[in-house]
Image 1: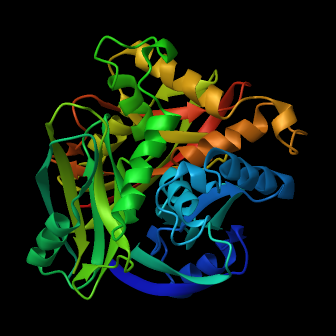
Image 2: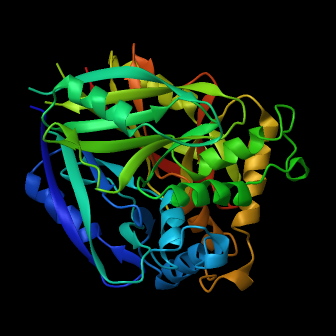
Image 3: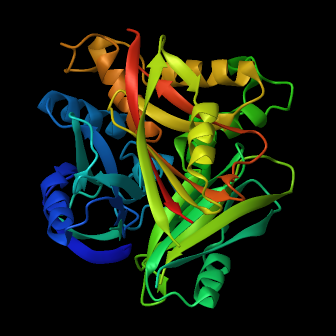
Length: 140
Length: 140
Length: 140
């Protein structure tokens, strides 16, 4: 019979960039004991976001971080909203360009990720922070 | 017991840019009387999109609108598809870079948005328009 | 009574760019015989993505492809991760800028797409490939 489960993960983001949260999410999903369903991951912030990316090559993650620094630079001359620091407005832009929410089908008790897919929290602020990631699972 | 509800919001977009639809969506969700579940918001257009953004600083929304004008400019020399106006092709690009759909977990009868998160319709055309936003809620 | 269905579509992507998968997805949805629900489409790759875009003007799709070539160019001097070919790192960036997952409400037995909306697999690699698209449907 279909039912639901939900929780909030607290994720440490000690530095700007990509933080792999695949294992934390997978552990919670497996604990719920669903055979099949739909998992939704929701980031409760506007200066951090979610991304599914290559989980193998470290250089790929470095290039991805550098790319977002390039297309949404920390340059106060570009923005009017600078009173929360030079990394604040680019943080909102990088969030807009990536994802606040991801849903992943669950099959055979596990997320149906591809072999090379990892789930990342993309932290856009310089200061270390802790982020709230809401998880919702529906299925059976 | 799990069940569903759905509707279509008609949203007025009198000008290009971000239009806060958080309250309209929240009112509908609360009216459905679900304790927990998953809300999906779906924009039925290719020249308007959805975004979760900062709901406090007006300057942040201004900078975000200016940013998308910069990275997907209304410059017909850049595009071959110009017969629907100079704002049409950039509208499709800005839609591609943001979201057509957002899902938000519902907890304690309300969307589990973070404190600073608002839900916006991002209108990309210059002409005033009315947009169809499909809402789907599943839960109990 | 609410229930679920799921499958994996194998989609041929013989060239870089947008491939219309609306019909393949729609046929599967209609075969499941759900009156209402939520369809989730999930791309199991990090160098191909999903996009809802204009289904009428071919020139619009051409401009969209050209735009992503411009903002995430195949230029190895920009990246450190080049050992999988000049199209590999831009593929990850274009995936990050678009969608890995889309959810679409189902109403009256069909996806509630707008008139001009088509669902596309956005292939970012040059080599012909076959992509796995997981579909999950929940509803009644």
